[in-house]
Amino acid sequence: MKRSKKITALCIAIAMLFAVMPTVQAEAVEARMTYIISYAADLSISSSGEASITGYVRGKSGVTSTYVCATLQKQSGNDWIDVESWEDSSTNRNLSIVETYSVSRGTYRVVVTVTANTETKTTVSVTRTY
Image (cartoon, rainbow, N blue to C red; front, side, top):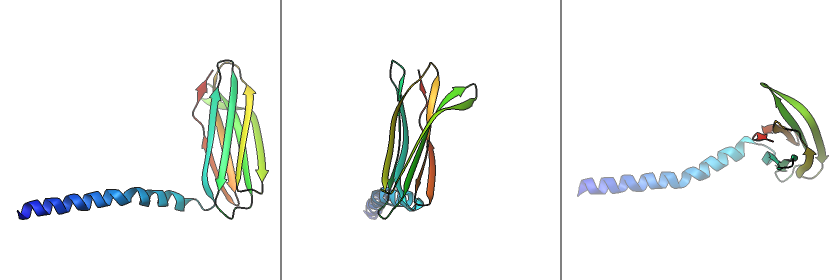
């Protein structure tokens, strides 16, 4: 009977640990960024070769300046060559760039650099082949 109580107590303790882990992880991610809530780069290419380029930043409350730069790159061997860039800035805490560009056959990605107040982050989209 005592062994059964110990196993039950252990199971409850493990369940409680897993119940609080997602909260702790979410706070750790949030704590690493001072002014930025989220940011992303996205690329899609249609069957006709029209690339849709997206980059955005979402700033925390109190952010007074944002900046987004999205650069479309094409793979050339092991290198990535800049094809086109777009940038925008704002005094709002959220900012997006959404652009289209006609591409030739090849493999592409988008590199997005964002700034909220003084915090800067860079991310790269998945690669897409046309």
